[in-house]
Image (cartoon, rainbow, N blue to C red; front, side):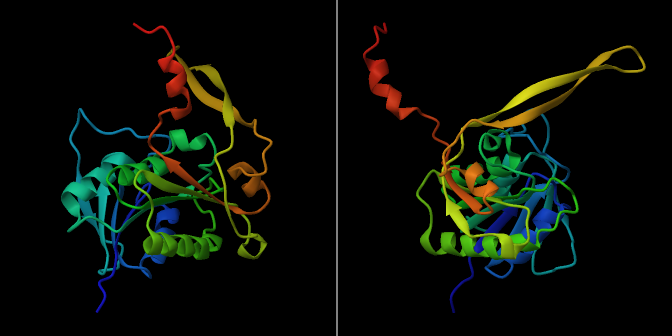
Length: 257
């Protein structure tokens, strides 16, 4: 009898988030599932890890005794590290992160706790995928995500991924019949034009709320932003090697001493 793949499930919205509950329901059909996720929302944490305080991981029960679930006091990257080193019986065959409440397309991948968890798994040589739905509401409807999550995950389990590469998948917030398919594409060149809303609290102390506007600077029709705007699921292979390889030879010609 063929052994089922071991699948690690995590996220950045917290173990109680509807998105991760949907992701777990899909992964149950593909293998044996262990969940290690933050005990509270960790959106925008990027690849932060806990260095100067203790970490806790507590078994929790969501009514399915076929799944081991742990609520972790740390960041998404902490969850993956702790899962691999302490909580899993062996190295997982796949790590999936999400389904995130909100977009992680384009520049958002830099700030994303969802994608940092996937990248942490990739650093450990584990095939990994981050899934996001373009709806920030807690009670978003994740039903349209299921078939795409399953299809992409099945393909990664079958084909694997090159070392150092993980997949960033974003799903438009429309009904499944309106989604045209999956578009393999590149990350769009875009950024946030940020502002700080300066206020004063009742004690007279100044404080700030971060706000901003997302600006797509990329007119290409091969980007994740184009795909999502045109009702496709975007699939972008990303890597944690940030080296600008094209500049190396030019820098060697500088008068560096």
